[in-house]
Length: 214
Image (tube, rainbow, N blue to C red; front, side, top):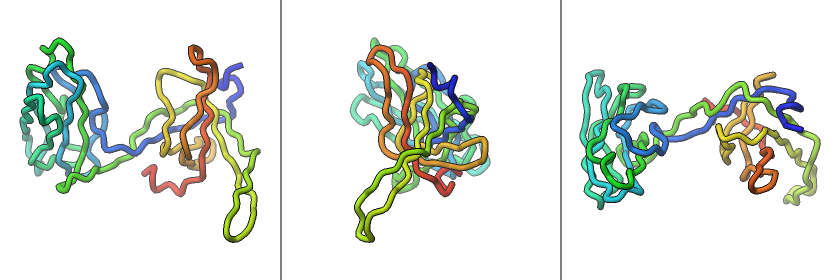
């Protein structure tokens, strides 16, 4: 029986990431998957191509004015960042255009991230999935040792059917849509079922205060 058939609530899953363009095979143009959360330099990485040679142009607002910057890749330096800081929420549609990359025998993959002036990543929480059926279980506990003695620690889990639409990841925030409670995925989710016929995910979570999902 499917988890969906036994589901007792709907969930929303959010994921903190600095990616504004998740890894994708290069095309002539790409729209941003997520907008920069703050004014950011845009770091672009390409990989896996035959020669990884070509350009990626980033388009958006800089100081409220339409602007762009061309990043040139020569097959050696495969990660480059704009010198310009693009406005929060200011990338165009499309936000990236390319030249030459799509002509390679093996077309490279492009990833783009929001970064600060020191190269640190600027994270935001993007919605991965919403209105997704899940089964909730708070019935098990563990008994870890601690300096203060022994005490039961509740094991809370969500179960969702396997799908090719999304995979749960460590650090994801799960919102219980029935009451607004938030949980953070703790550890690596377990995929159950035969290797060729995966069935469902078992996701261990811990209560979250909500800051990571904002």
